[in-house]
Length: 145
Image (cartoon, rainbow, N blue to C red; front, side):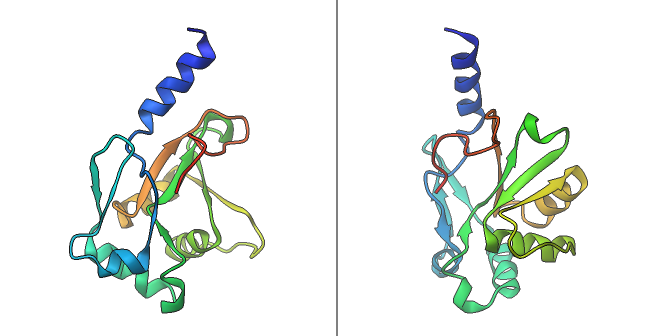
């Protein structure tokens, strides 16, 4: 097996905790025990309090548009301690939590280790790490929800 294939398999192994698909905040709020299935077949549970907190940060009409968990993308190409978040709603929420300004037309939000730590402390079940090796820092598998 060449180095690139080996590295790709290792990254896939690191990302097996990621969801098979993401679910809307609205749908999760209706579930008695909010959860999703992960790529390795296990169950990822969401804390109800965390979902309610997110619901307070967004107008109700946006609850069906926010898909969880939010993915924090980690890639060596971003630099040490840096992470990337995609999605307008995801960025809006994380900017509120971090009290961080930004351009409305930005496609991605770049955050650094102290901010990642703050986000993960505040949203431990509604955010997940994805590890990447692509030069673009894109999707670790080809599909995330």
